[in-house]
Length: 488
Image (cartoon, rainbow, N blue to C red):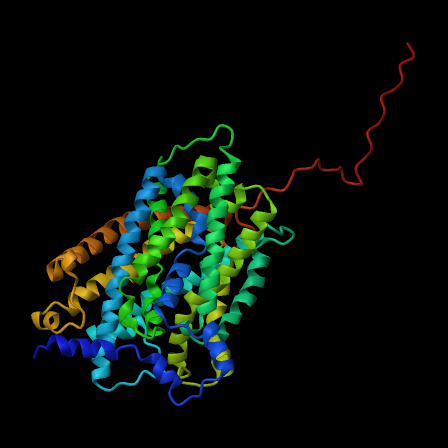
């Protein structure tokens, strides 16, 4: 039986009373108000900061590298295109979350001590097979997303202090990032998301202004694109850039009114583009093809106090983004071992620690900052946040009854259901062929090339070669005999 429009409004409003459940029966004092201000975020603004901050972390430093592979025009075009595509599939995920939660709350399910995740949405709407596929892709992507943040930390700090190699810095930052086990949920990232976005904004504009002031290097060349392998590798790095909505469900669940999330990711993407387009274009303009061998933009800019400040701010932001990527993995692990409902923060933190160990290990095996982004983008992001959400939306609402009873109807400007399904089909076909097919081929060739060139467990990836000094003769070598005197 179809619901009336009033019924739909009532059901939609029911979704998102999470903050009311948390504060029910608790007195609010000054200390609680201060704690809530810094620690408990659930507004649309908090969600916007979380999405924007999570989307533009270390990848900001690799986008000039992608520009050198793609060329200026393609680099700009792919950012605009994948930004729009990512916003669309984030919208689909938000619709499916609201649909799932509304159905469960009709059944009087209580989410007081439970964080809903993407694989549970798929399970509730489409069954266990969808759940298993979604869980596998989502967890693997978030695992390598955390690995990338750890690699980026070691890569960046090396440009301030090269007394230690990048592998040693990876050990150190792995221990530092393990402290994210003490952050309970995305509800508690309010101040961190805000600070993270400020730090990335400073870094982006530093890259832009510093590159313009530096000017073009002597004999600069802008020859990209030159090879299909490099072209599709660069394109999949941008696919990865705008695929940060693997944590959309967890961010929505932390909101007081999740149904307001629909356009948040789009506006976050618009802001992110104001950072990525100027910085990527400016660094590529200044250094051109040199970027093909320097995947980290910091490596080509001269060392100054401002550059050191940008590096430090990015390190802090990468620590925050590590927490963003790893927190859903903590939730999955907690549910697997039966600790998700535990009220003790210390016990939950201790239970989460085993999740960090494989991340630490993988970051040491594959320290290929830059190429690993494209590989993860093509093989994991393509399915996790583009293909699976588009397919899940179509299968969830394939019947006329499901479309009629949907909590959220598609907007008129996209053509209602017909237009939505058309866009979904385009997303699936494009990302499967271009992102996964050509992108997977190119990024795997490039990744294998990095392994052949540097090897696994490489101690210092893309570090400058040490200066060559003349080798002194061994101490036991015979001294050269003087030439006999000539008295003639």
